[in-house]
Length: 144
Image (cartoon, rainbow, N blue to C red; front, side, top):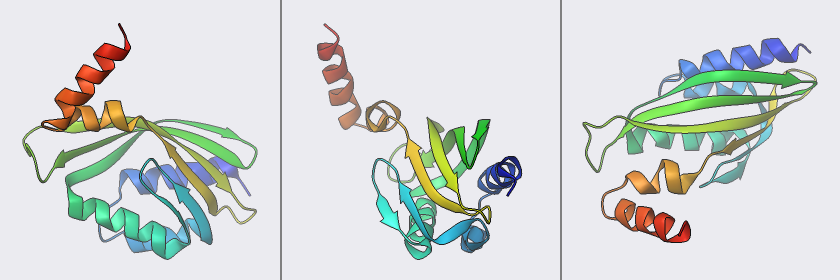
């Protein structure tokens, strides 16, 4: 298995992800893959697909920009920017969440673990109306 090739293929897939391409995750993920982010922890391809399908229901124009790729053995770490607009709030403001994904591949080059790391407070909650003001105030108080 060529981890660099598998990582590049995964990065290209996520940069081009659309609602129509979500079912193609089966070509990249093991059927029993584990996925975790600040809001979800699931196992199995149907649950992972559900998370990515929901992204298109909850947000306007979500898309990923992969900013770097590190590969070591059968694992990789991708850094990315996730860009979107809120549907429920100010839809004119483009939001950006910066994070990273730790990926483990099996011998067939399929993802068995996908763990996203990003700061939900700074990257999301602080940008929400009302809650954002409270979060920024709490952050300021914690730093004094």
